Image (cartoon, rainbow, N blue to C red; front, side, top):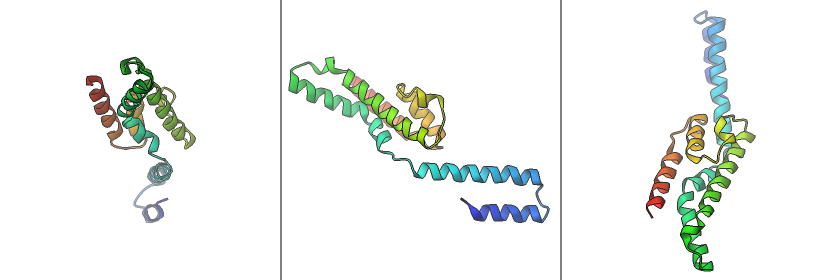
Length: 142
């Protein structure tokens, strides 16, 4: 929690520079920002990093299974789909457990939408989305 900011805010209220309503509104913003920061520090990014590179990882697994079984890797596309879904729902579950709420947390099977909403919920740059789109585009061309 940002105690210094709350103390400065209280001084402004005591001096009559801001009203009670302004004080409460600003205090609420400070507390919400502090709560978001506390939550984001508890997030393990392993799932979302894995998800970012899931198209590459899935393709690698498809080729590995294809060589082991003799099945054409093109027929093993579902491995990548399953990997993406498992990783996105695992990350979404983690966010839900920390108290985050959002439509795409329940619809994490749609990875681009999930990664976009995740970046908005956490006030982050959508880097995971851009990496996923890049790796997905590359694997489609492969």
